[in-house]
Length: 320
Image 1 (cartoon, rainbow, N blue to C red):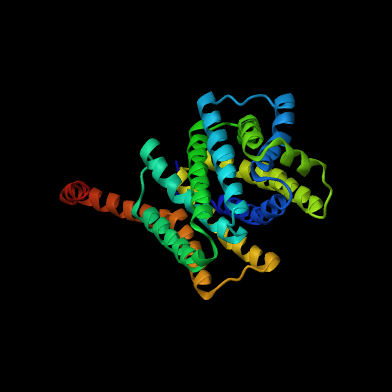
Image 2: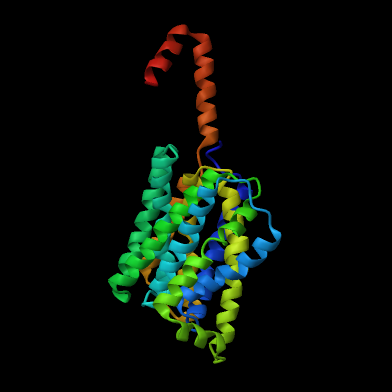
């Protein structure tokens, strides 16, 4: 499996990062009207009903499909929505959630036995350092509880990444759609117990000024955030090692924090801009393997080995 990405796949991964970065503004608008757990349930109910009616179940192991739904759908969004409701700003949430990238790399190395090259490790470390710089700059604006909640959501995303990568479905969009069948029942049950039927009913029947933005935000998360974004992401994860694709999620806070600054007035400091540059640089380092230089070096080794048996022996010994 190639360790470097074609340019078209890099552009697709970057497009997903942009869609997911703007997704945080849509979520913030949704949470101004709907309670968080019910908002997660409603988001996936809209996808699950037509999926059950018209989309054939993908031929992937049921445990991976459930794992994808629980990690990506339940844990990620339940804790993300709770974190944003309890005080995590949209821009900062887009940053903290990208802890999913190093989580994914570590889980893939532990459970999928995907190797980590020095270049990829260096890129992830650099991008993580950039996230840390931005995080330190923004730490004063968020309490500890919202930060921890969103961090747990990032771990859920990583679990979903690993499950979707193992599934390797021939039709990734079908996996995304069937993943949406998992969250509605547990999320509706949690919403009913935690948020209460009165609050849920009020959010459905009230027609205040927040309703239209909330519905627009919900439509964005369903169509662009889930169908388009997750569909492309799953397609990429099925064709490349998780550690190659996951670092692109670190571009999400660059988009999310910039959009939050433009739309919601969340300020961006010089330190945050420096951190964003580190994130972009780290992603590029982690995702671009020096294939040309490797092939040139191997060609030189083959040529030198053909000329001299002694040289060939040194090459083998040197590789131990």
